[in-house]
View 1 (cartoon, one colour):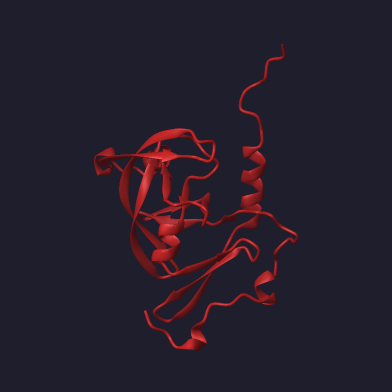
View 2: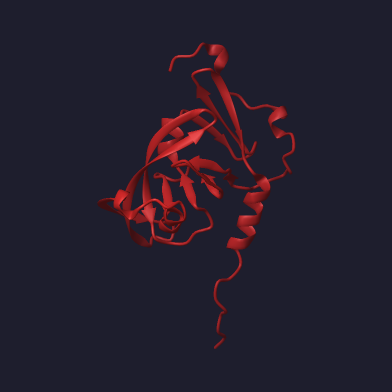
Length: 169
């Protein structure tokens, strides 16, 4: 997509309206995935793949037969290796429909979906956790997608709660 130079993506003070600063929040926003409204979507330019939880696919009523049997190994930041499967899903953002590959993970995480660099680059998006938004080039110009900072704070807080009681020696 070749847009004139005046369509360059920039962030300014206006993008900080309604942002509780200082913030160290992840960029979280609900979107439509496979024609289903999905909350708890994290946009993460540190992720080399797009992820979706198997449990999320089940809640979306997507049959497991749509999951490709191609298996790959996913290594998380704790160096734990997990086998994943793949699925292609349509993502709808501000009037733009696109199809993307997702690694299906059978692990419960704080987020239902993680949109990583493949999605960010394919969509020609510029995410800003500082501004809590994404700007992207659409055929009609620059589109801004606002993150949900409160949701990011809520899910961060819930992810920090222990899942099992520790035993003392």
